[in-house]
Image (cartoon, rainbow, N blue to C red; front, side, top):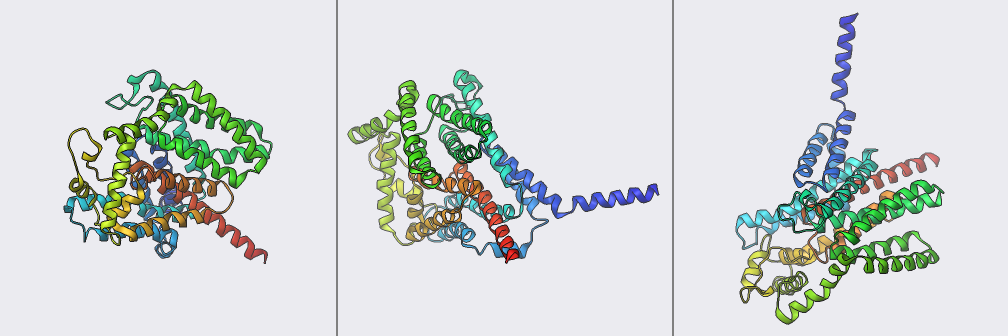
Length: 427
């Protein structure tokens, strides 16, 4: 009996280890670790994401997965990768530059995998919680580094309150978390769950306070009001919008008076522009204006299919004028605008695919619910921040988009299928 019991236990463990459920749970774990590590480390994000993809293979229903790739929300990001791959054929850049430029589009191939997985997994909400907790911990470290700069892991110590990565990435994370919390806070208030609503409100305010008094990117300053405007139009009545708008304006005025850091960041808008126009200095804003002006010229030279993958740096080298400390002398492979980045390399064809990605993903999140709200916010944030950066191709912001849309989109599809089954059973 003992031997038989041992054999039965061994068989049960074998079946457990090799069951689709076990592999699915392991994939969920690595997906959670991926999103939790995103604010802290690019290496860990890549490692955990690779482990997630590996765990997907043993229990993947290939027929269902391949069928899911035909959906427009999956086909569009795959199409941009294929366009980047095809663009290497008509580019004049060195092959190393061409293949390097394909790299930023590879992450888009993970988006359909996430949509497929979280359409079936019930643990999508844990991804949101993991990212929120991770960003909250990073906020604590940001305050510590602001007071004790030697705690930073960055060698240059130049960015105030930055423990890892940079102030643009950190501002993107904090802005997304702070605005995303608006939906559950309003929902909890309507349900009269005031304690939990107060807790989430305090957490959201902690992100804003960090951005006001420690460090914030100018891109975040521009996009946060837009994201709040989207929330207000979707989820609030006009009377509430008016009251909240007055309160936000009052809060902004107080923050402006209380925070020298905020005033300094805002003042650079005007000073950067003035120094660029009058002296041609390579200020942050001046460089963007220079890059955009030249990129529009490159696009006009090859408007249909562009100059090919990886061609951008070579074009800027040819268009370089002057020397020394001048914006016109700068050479770059990224024009700091997602649409122009695509337009220079792949022309109108690339722009059409890029817009298709954004539009299709916006339409995916038309409904109500937390997943729809977070997915919509991720897309809106990416669209508007991509006016000033190539955020779909950047590592950190690109993965925020891929993971956010993939997880939230999978949850939305899962809910739609559940509702369809309930409706079919009822009829």
